[in-house]
Image (tube, rainbow, N blue to C red; front, side, top):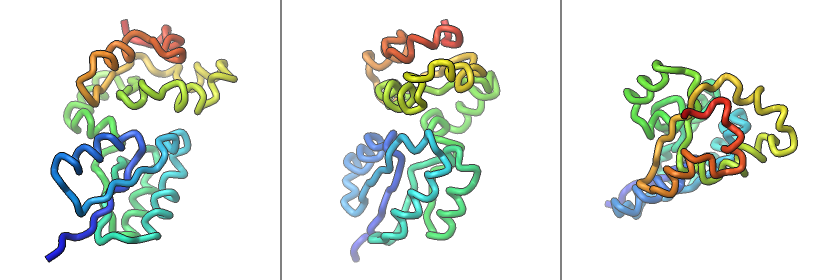
Length: 182
């Protein structure tokens, strides 16, 4: 008996992790597809993008590599329509840290900005230019003024990424001085 054809549809920010799980476990019946990570700048578009892919079919089961990701429940409504399942949690930061650790971090200070390797690596493109801060730096306070600390959730053991996340080596990150942790 052939295993079910499984589609894992996720955020482009999780592409490496999802592909790694499939490869390491030799899940030949699983196909990983990713939507652009920049959808997080417009979370209302995530449910439609997911629905468009699920409507094309071609699988027996669909697993969705997103949390709610700011869709205010709209993603769950799409998944119910298509019989798909998603990762538990509000967003990827929760499943990178684990629900218990994330809750503790959030409870300690809800004014926390979460940074992953992917976001650190692509910060200038996804956040700085993606939110047009490169052309409108006056928006920096509006977007980030309520944050008081940054928590770096490392996806892979990489001294380079730890240094990049902590040093402000990115052009955009170096402008965070007023709210970056010491």
